[in-house]
Image (cartoon, rainbow, N blue to C red; front, side, top):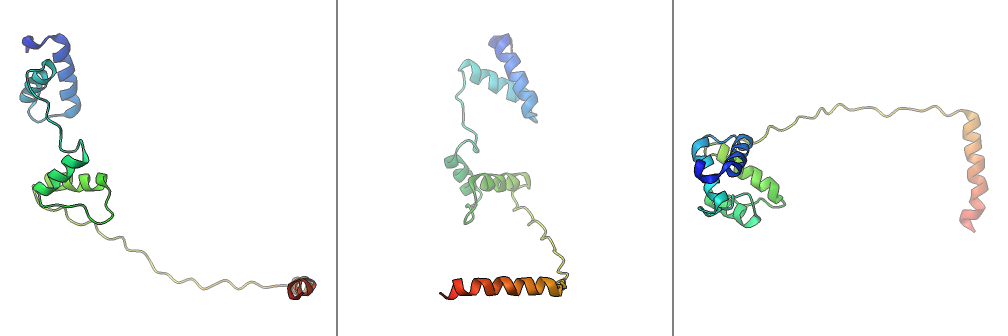
Amino acid sequence: MSDYGTEIVLDAVRTAVVEQTPDPVSFLKALCQRRKGERKTTAQWWSSEELIMAKGAEFSLEPLSGESMSAFKARIQAYIDNDGKPPAPKPLRVVSSTRHEPETVEVSPENRAAALEAARALRPTLVG
């Protein structure tokens, strides 16, 4: 690693810690080579819509009707994480169907009389 300089190596180690790569030695070497320009940078499959679509096609997956690209990307990742099997469908949420009877509201005779009087006062305006 001394061939790449302290700055490049430290940056690669920071990246490896964040990425939590399963093979840190290979990851560090490849990253140092890329940073020094000795190795081509390859775009990650999730870095563009075109690459996401290509990765989906690799597994015979296509976006569902109305599915956002981020949801499709998540579905591909779930497929990868599940060893090439489609993820199990999420369980449906059961909603209770308790029926509520409407409340009956008692209207006082005074309020009923006031409402009728207000309606009669509006009547000429509505008809005319």
